[in-house]
Amino acid sequence: MNAETKIRNDLGAYWMPFTANRQFKDNPRMIASAEGMYYTTTDGRQVMDGTAGLWCVNAGHRAPRITEAVQRQVEELDYAPAFQMGHPKAFELASRLAELAPGKLNHVFFTNSGSESVETALKIALAYHKAKGEPGRTRLIGREKGYHGVNFGGISVGGMVNNRRAFGTLLGGVDHLPHTHDIARNGFTKGQPEHGAELADDLERLVALHGGETIAAVIVEPMAGSAGVILPPKGYLQKLREITRKHGILLIFDEVITAYGRLGRAFGADYYGVEPDMITTAKGLTNGVIAMGAVLASEDIHDAFMTGPDHMIELFHGYTYSGNPVACAAALAALDTYREEELFERAASLEDYWADALFSLRDKPGVIDIRAVGLVGAVELEPFADTPTKRAFDTYLRAWDKGVHLRTTGDTIAMSPPLIIEKSEIDQLVGTLGEALDA
Ligand SMILES: Cc1ncc(COP(=O)(O)O)c(C=O)c1O
Image: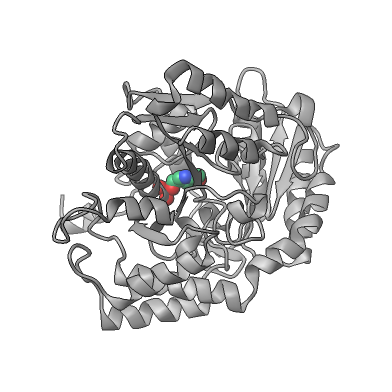
């Protein structure tokens, strides 16, 4: 094989993540560039980004401040060691996030992804209880249909079977709350579902089963995105907060999707009016430009570690790229963009228009539920009996051919456009999905 053949791009070498590799490579969908709300494909077509990348490009593609900040930062300081060393932008970014975060969530631990944020929060929860003199609190509680990334902690507390079943016994000492997906009682509800707050009481059952003093933390997404946009019933998150507090259990909100404006507020915690003990974030933190995540932790959690001799490392955890200077520059510029362009407020002002547009699809063929919150939406389809997931994926492919990129999970079509979307573009997105459903 000569050098030329070796570098020939035949698509085979790249093992694509969460992708039907063989199907994709038979008919690739390749993106060459992007700007604002649109991708341009390698064959020159414009395709609207109906999902903000993977729920991350909240300010739209190639937001100028972020591009410039990254370019400047690479010229100035490309990398600085993260352990026993610092650089000013990491401290500035942590301060900005602490200011943005609800209540007492005043401390920030940097990671490189949502999955790493989840692992970090779970480890902090365990180590916190140990530091406070309760080393017996080792149990972690997740929720059915939860998605917390793909690392071992995250898939253990997660509740999506395909993400778990091939990977052995996972972490021990994990249990799950029931999910809140209930079309029979809550189908086609605009806003928060009426029914299901009582599902949070299942935590009392787990406390009675395991002993509350063995449970370290409960982790949930305030709005479960990846399992198909499942909203918390009215009062549900408040109940979880009450029960966790009553039993000394930490409450972690996994806001990898909901943080940074997706629901029209800085965090889902703000939207739902519930303050957890930790929030995990990533995605919109840098507008998707550079891989970065952040865990926001309460004063109480942080301070529990700041004991013992000064020269000792307090938490044996961290990543080579924690607080990477280029990522910090991107995140600072993303936060500036969100603020200066008032994108969170913009998402809030579009929430009703967005929901009304989506609900116009309720009589389309196969639609069994529609859900919307902030600038997130889902259209759930009746699965074909013998080929589950195919109906949604076929619909997705038809929309792609018509110039709109959506996302599917199971037989649900999920949408989460950049927060810069115009009303006319909402009409275009929903109109195209309607045509794809009709076809
Ligand atoms: C709630 C939640 N947690 C964690 C993750 C994992 O993030 P990443 O893919 O950056 O590891 C995701 C990704 O979609 C997510 O939605």
